[in-house]
Image (tube, rainbow, N blue to C red; front, top):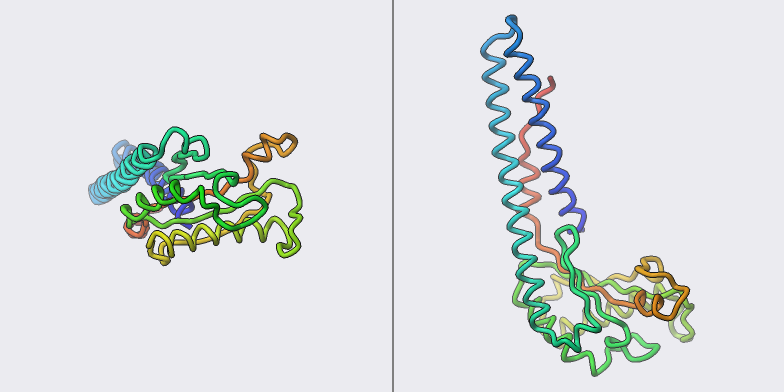
Length: 232
């Protein structure tokens, strides 16, 4: 997914920097050896220059992504009222924007149906998502560890997936977001952010995350163009 691709971009930068260090060590060895010809030295200098240029391209791409995420996050938080922000948490982690919504605000009690009171908040978030059409959107449902008591829902896996699907369909049908940009997923009770041994912890774990990720095709294309490393 996109989160993995962002990590790959960061790892590629680190890998390429390590390659430059290796090339520079090889160049120094050549310069200190009278048996090495000018051809090897020239080739190593070219490779170092090529790698440094590639690193700069990767860094520029990452900086662009970081800047877009900052603007997106600011627009989201500015559009929501102080009261709404008590049920919404917006943050950026590893190049990805996370909008966490409390189940208390978002759904009818014990159900996966969207609550009427969630409409205003969802519409504001949907408007920002619609404005930033270069981003993909993963809706991820999460629960606490209390078994579901509703007979028509088998377990927390189903509940989390159904809730995520409800949000996806609302974004598509009520707010006109292109469904090709949307993915629904459920993580059940297995992605907690707090302990389930208190009511507050359970409430924090019962959440739905809207995960907004830049379409990183151009970054992946860059990674595919990495200079070939020469064996030293």
